[in-house]
Image (cartoon, rainbow, N blue to C red):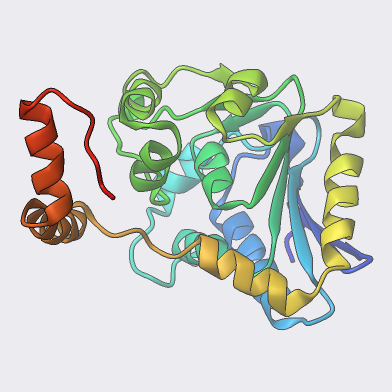
Length: 252
């Protein structure tokens, strides 16, 4: 385990801390690998019921270390970045983030894969991909519009402007804003409560909530079937007749 990523287990809760404060916890390939390894180990360990992700030194993460990223561009499914993204998106147990300071790029998109997110007033989330001539990652182009709506997601992605913890809470990205000196303790206390709950029930509840939504074409096809059936129904005939006769429909 890299010293840039620390782990601690207590009361069934694994806390993973990004620990490169001099660089605002900017993520290197080695750090991605360390977090991916920690998540894989937690997945396999029945004694670990919940994972908390946080950052040291008043920052969550400034995103990718661009020098490291450009020197080691991610290619393939077994690179550290790919393993991290796969690990965080398929993790079966409750995943909680405690966010203070900057949460840039993947520092924000990883939150979309967390079940609960607590943020300090100092938190500043940002999605600067387009500003860097890049595109959103970590399935954020699907998950963020689904969470906040297309127009708001477009604003966040296209302009790449930082937004604060209260805004993130209003958008549903953050569950609660907590004083910075209480942030990690609050996240760990909430995690400890979850760790006492039935583990299979927790796993299944998460699995049900994370079922992939139908894509647009599939959804349109399903809507079309129901629309066609309803169009031929007695209910629709009565509704349209009542409309033309300017009366309230009577569905018996």
